[in-house]
Length: 521
Image (cartoon, rainbow, N blue to C red; front, side, top):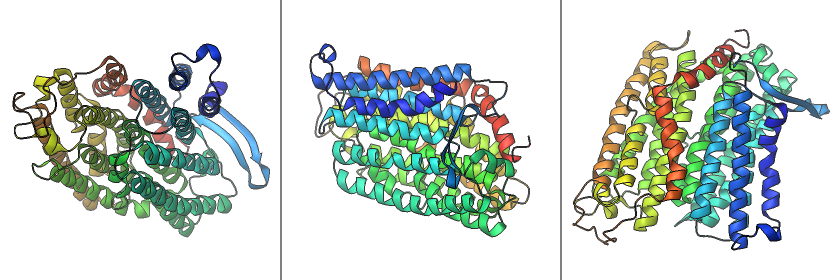
């Protein structure tokens, strides 16, 4: 178990280095490009298999205990350690990350985005995977920061070199926003470590903020929370996200929504809730307010983009939907209750699965129509996917109803539990304020259903004989085999998590109970 976790974190870096080397003569296949893409699929597949083995070996009777731990001294003068471990909070995120990277590598093997060297693409993808997996596995504040920052450069280049229109501007906006947030976050992490005498996240969580003054906790929450809020992204620090998603290649959008956004909310749960509980209690009403505004704002933006005549880009629409969905995650965290935090963690996983699938589908539509503009796709009567590509249309409709929170699918449980957490927040928080936030959140679910159903009507329905302008071929390609292989696991897990939520909640709840009790539960 200890070796498996270290292997999962380090193997992508070794794979990235190997991707830049010439392929051995017997493994070149038809071309060097094919060999390096196959290398990416192999490495991510091995990492996924190791993550699954890690999950099978995990002691499910003790999900609140850190397992598969490695604890080695790294910088003795600062008491910085190479400390790795997983519990019921981090294990689901680790598994989802490994799965999404494997599916993106598989998809890219058949549909590589236009750009420079495939070697560079695969190497960047693997470096990105290592950084995201490390973020969910490290248990030292400075290591967390290094892993948190490690993903920025690979994602910047994936957008800037393999993206679409306006990719340079979108990539610069992404890197500037996140870097500025990270600088402030580092100051907060140093403030905690230097005042408490340790950067060990387990020791800090067990101490539960007793070594930190109230002022120190307030400053730490403000600094760290700002950096995490940019990555989440929280309204009004979200403006980099729609541009980045619109310009990114398909797999870049899938990973950005499915994995990178979760790093921000994970930091709130893993660091701020247990380490600075008093500071979080002070700022929780403001976090809840921003979350509630983000839910409604994201939904209204999507509703505007979905309306006929507004030239709404489908990728941009799904990006704005992420602002709303992550608002539910932040609302659950702001409630500071086991119910709300469990809902936030469940919503994290559900959003990764569903929005990852949506970006895959929108990318496929853009490949077929050469545009993601909703008015162009729908034309006068609708894009008629049900008639032209019935399997693609059915899967798009499925992903849309999952995203709007239909009971029985994964999206329902996270949002419901987050709203329940706001209904009865932690002791000391203003219940009238959180009831107001809950009402905003409930209104946001109605708006979400409205814009997603409009999208389904405009894209999936219509007269197949009435071609939109500019007219695509009447015989539109349905789901290809490689698309089926890349998308089916996400759809299946969305159904499984919706019908059997106890699988995930059984992992997270004991760990959340212990985390909120300061390690004493």
